[in-house]
Image 1 (cartoon, rainbow, N blue to C red):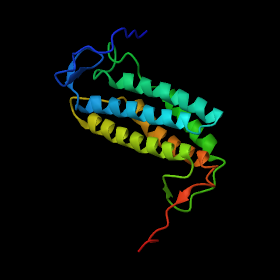
Image 2 (image 1 turned 90 degrees about the horizontal axis):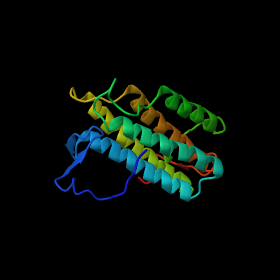
Image 3 (image 1 turned 135 degrees about the vertical axis):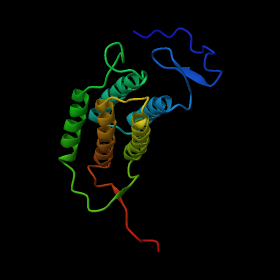
Length: 189
């Protein structure tokens, strides 16, 4: 259980922050950037929840926000295996995302053009969340490519699938695609 009695600690005044094992890292460190970007993603998802998400979408996004904290906990330690991460993202969480993608995509018409972010408010915020998710994924892949670091395969898969789910949900929130804003190539030449 997490207990936060004191919000400021002054330990980050030197430009560092602590990983889950107490190791200090610079605040611009890729690992810190990865889970900080996931925190930003969760905040964007919070905007969707308060600006137009129906009850089913709200419940789904609440679970995603909780799972994002699991991914962040997975990232807060650089060690893996016994004595490593307190929380590890699982393949079951990835499978759940895939099932949601298939469920929500089933009612959508096939795309015949790229989609511009917009339409309804919830859809626009879902597109914003999707782009933040893609940025988090890029940071996690870069982190994983460093020989001294690592990211669990399930965490990488989770974030990749989540961006796909956010795209599908943006279409769902746009009246199942009826309010999608389609790209019109060369329209303004």
